[in-house]
Length: 354
Image (tube, rainbow, N blue to C red; front, side, top):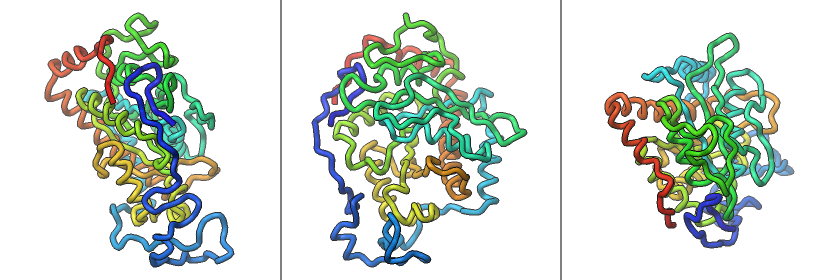
């Protein structure tokens, strides 16, 4: 399996075999090392069991992060996000980037669902291996019923491809972040956005640009992502950081890799497996684990779960904090910063090398 940006010969990834085991955890069952560890019986479980194991490795002595799982705290987070305003008055635009099937669209739908009070697919979610999203789609998160929309807009784009000629191109990613891409633009791996493209925004405003980038990785596929993905993300991070845009990472599908978290999402930060996955994602991205948020998206559920909501809201809260840093920098640096950002647009940029 190889990984590359569609249409851009940015790097030649080395083919590597897919492995089923990471950090002592196998999707097929516990490793010998895990079998020798102390286990903890889950209350109410039986030895005959269901599809999930009834015994798990001991929880961490201390939770990785302190989080309040109360309804009051959930409501506080919802209110904070609903009342959030940027210093410029423009909505915070957040771009989600990740491999096909990582859960970008599902995260957008999950966040909107919890504000709507019911599980709905607001962003079109599909199961195609080629990815469901093909164009730039912006979703303003609506507040609770009867309330005004929030000042948060999430942007969904084509996923990063696994193979030459597939997925969104590097140039298209930068064009979206800089605000040149028109809403609804359909991405083509072989035809990146160009100033001659219909609808191209020659002089994007602050409101057109992206103020925070969110990388999305599937925890259940970390071991099988190809080696080239690490270099790809780090190249992206270098260029995005040069634009003054901060980044956060969402680690999705944590319920697929940790049985005790699947049983009770409140165990997420006490799970050694989730902590290992966060560390692995951090190594892949060259990012501190403090900027990595494990989440559980709504998929097959028909009803909302308060604890799942709290985890999702905590991620959104962190995203908005990083978006705020962008607006603070713009306010302090003023027009000079804007000129620098515009001058970095170059369609003759030499291809990046992995």
